[in-house]
Structures are given as structure tokens and as C-alpha cells.
Amino acid sequence: MSRLFDGLRVIDAANFIAGPVSTTIMADFGADVIKVEPPTGDIYRVRGAGYPASAYNYPWIVDNRTKRSVAIDLRTKDGQTLLHRLVRDADVFVTNAPLDSRVRLGIRYEDLEPLNPRLVYASISAYGEAGEEGSKPGFDSIALWARTGLMDLVRASKNVPPARSLPGMGDHPTGVALFGAIMAGLYHRERTGRGTAVSTSLMANGLWMNAIQVQGILCGTRTEVRPPREEAVSALANLYRCRDGRWFMLTITGDERHWPAFAAGIGRDDLVTDPRFVDAPHRKVNARALTAVLDAHFATRDWAEWSPILEKTGVAFGVVGTLDDIPHDGQMRASGALVPMDGPNAGVSLTVSSPLQIAGQEKVPARMPPEIGEHTVEVLRAAGVDDAAIERLLAAGVIVQARRTAHG
Image (cartoon, rainbow, N blue to C red; front, side, top):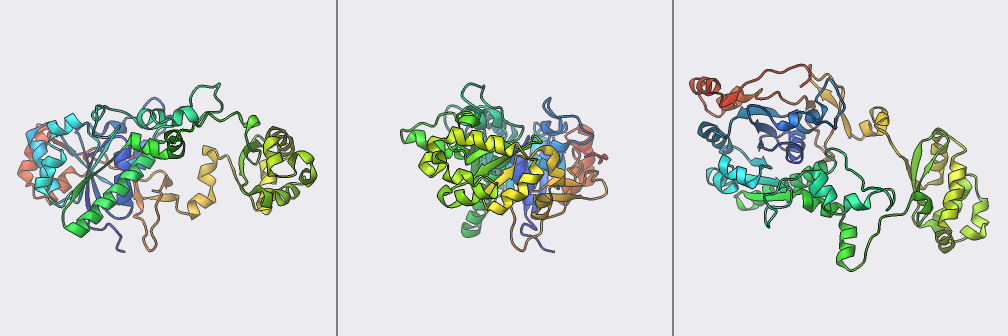
């Protein structure tokens, strides 16, 4: 079947996470994504200390699946010539290289645009490309999470240290933002016939994630670290623990309408006539007392018992999921959020799909990510590089051709 991005050629010359995420989404919808990495490979292939051991390089799987790899040493003149040859036939070029490195490697927009005026050049940085920090390196944990107030505000209470982010937590939404910028760039090309440069940054995406609170401070108000859950300002927008230790989140808006049905549904219709909770203003003033009442009540049954009871009340609620829940989550599979891994060398059965669905479009079956330079020779041959030149470049170490291993 035809897919949305069939025939679209994308060069992924980025490393780590956010840049490659944007090209993974394009690969899902049929783009031919060529990952250009150094002969030693993208440094993201080496898992850091924060990743549990596994037979599979699972960070690499989720962020670089369904791509082809070409290993080229861009520090050499021959390597830059090869890349420029690939750029001439590309639609999109993605990089997150530091600005000074782009000069040395010949991969600035002004270097590539003359070779291909229809190219959409997509750039990602830590702090944006203008200003004193335009060349400053940074990861999502620093530029997105720590810099923008998220790390300070998302913690259990003001008396505990700021909350650390998880690996890739900010990179993945930033990669989606870059994908959106690339789509705008392609639309610009559709309308004008010429490509353009698009960009985003980790810091900008962190501000966007924290936009309500940031706009508040810009308007002269201040958001404080939220109090402990026992002191929450609303007992009906809080989390509770069941007898078996499972937590769930409850969010009731418009509680004057939902409160009677909710209280009756959980077997506490006496709360409706309790003077402390008789209306929304009283429930707000007495939020701590109501939280304590609900704490004691929800602790009388397991989550498996409470879930169908809460379902019948019609209010919004949800379990605080754990990683162990996810492989067995039927809704994640049914909705396409988790999809099968395709191919004889898959090894793993499922992968996390990109978070976009388009009516009438089936995504490409997810394939294991490439080995370093697994497709170097076939891509260069297709670009018109003859076998003698390929052999010379292989011998000189300018390019690398690898074979697939079992676990990708």
C-alpha cells in the first residue's frame, strides 16, 4: 500500500534522542530515513549508567528503528563530499550538531542549501541558536527540565529536593515538535517550490510544557510548589491508595454536578449531607478532612474492586501505572500506542509507536534499528558512487559497512 511519506528521502545526521525521534516518526509513515553516523557509531548506541542491563539495546530500538545506516567520517574531505552527494537528492536534513561543529563538518544550512534549494533543513539545539548560549551543549534534563521551572515545581512538596527527570522524557516531545516544524517546512516548499530552515530547542519545549505557570509569572502571579497530597487544595483532584498498595488518580471537575453520584457510587452517600462537604466551597475549605475520609475509605478494598465501582460513577479516574503493567495493557495495543516488531531478527515482540495517527494511513511495520553502517554500500551505490571508489573509501576508513547482529 502507498503511505504518506513514500518517496520522501530524509537524512538523519543527529545523535542521541530528540533529533532522531523526529525522523522515526517520518519512517513510521513511509519515509526512507538514512541515518548518517560516524564510523564509531552514534554515541547513543552506548547505554549510559542509568539504563538497566538487557540483551537488547532498547533505547536505540525505540529511537532509531526502521532506518538505514550509513557510516561516514565527516571530518574528512571525502566524507563531506559523500554527504553532499546524498544531500542533493534529499528532502529533509536533520542535525543537532553544535554550531561550531557544523562549520567544521560543512553541514550548516548555508553549506547545504546551494546543493539542494528544495531541502528542508531541520535543526535542534539545547537553548536556541541565537544569544550567548546558542552554542552551549545541554541535555533535556538540564535545558528542558531544570532550566524552565519544571524540575522545581514537580515535586511532592517544597520540603523535598527537586524531582529528577527520566531519560529521554523531554527529548521525545521535543522530537515531536521538530517533526511538526519539518512538516511546516515541507508545506512551505509545496507552496513556494523552495526549501527552508526550521528549528526548535529543548529549552523552548520546556517552557511550552510549563507554559501555564510561566505565563502566570509573566503576568505577575506566582505558582508555588504544591503542598503534600494530604494537604491538597481539592480532595477530588488527588491520588489515593487502595488496600493492595495500588494508587489511582481522581479528577472531578464541576463537582456540584458529580459529587452526589460519586459519593453514592462509592458507598458514602452520607458525605453528601455532611455539613463539611455540603457544597463546593465547603469541600474546598475542608479539603484536608475530606482527603482523610477518602483515604480511609479507599484503603478498605483492592484496586481490582474499586476500578469497576469508580467506572460506574462516570467520573474521571485512572490507575497510577507501573512499567510492569504496560506489556499487558490491552488498550495500549488496541489504540496503536504499542505495536508489534516486524522481521526475523526482531527478538522483541513490541515497540512504542510514534504518538500520531492519520486516518487512512497504516504505519510501516516497525523493524529493528540498523547496525553501524549496515546500509553504507547500498546507499552509496544508489547515489552513483562506483565500486572502485567504495572500496577505496572502505580501505581508508572514511566509510564503514557492518553486518546485522541478532539484537540490533
